[in-house]
Amino acid sequence: MRRRVDGPFARRLARPGVEEVCELAGPFGFMAYHGGALEQQTDVIAAAAAKAAGASLYAVLHPETDSEHFPSTLVRPDESLALAEFIEHVDVVVTIHGFGRWGLFTSLLLGGRNRALAERLGVELLVALPDYDTITDLEVIPAELRGQHAGNPVNLPRSAGVQIELPPRVRGLGPKWAEWTGDGLVPPAQALVDCLARVASSWRPAGR
Image 1 (cartoon, one colour):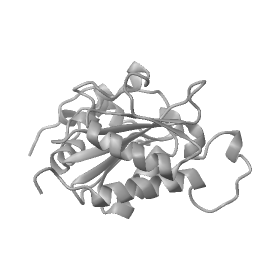
Image 2 (cartoon, one colour; image 1 turned 120 degrees about the vertical axis):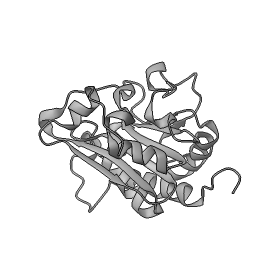
Image 3 (cartoon, rainbow, N blue to C red; image 1 turned 60 degrees about the horizontal axis):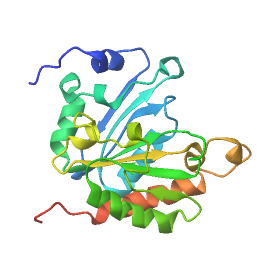
């Protein structure tokens, strides 16, 4: 059995109330390791898309008492047996993140090193979410949100993956949805999930 190395991510996972989720299914994976109270609704969206597509899921849910942000480069497979198994199992991944910046509150940013998948998702999302901007041009995306670092988990699977940064409004947060009383996800979040699941279900590894 692989031995887990002690480090920042391992110690983060060991904090009270932190929950690690790993569900191995299809070769397409979804991740949300800033889930729970950290980047709200990201784990919910990732889990819903994975379930709808029969895809694999890796998520970390953080309680309110564990709200300190940490960079993706600290999320290392050698510090988590579950993450290592997930990375080895999937061929490609979509990582769901949350962000909020002035001027980008209606923008979805698609980073990560699998640019072919990013462009395909971008086309699909333009149709699924016509009231939002979907940005795939890495030169337009802020450098720290591009997900290009080799150590970022989105780039570790065999075919790497796409990092999707979601503004609060798409996730059902903020004043726009303060009085919303519907069941389940808000409409744009559900449209996003449907789109992600559709692409994941139709994706095939290269050579198959």
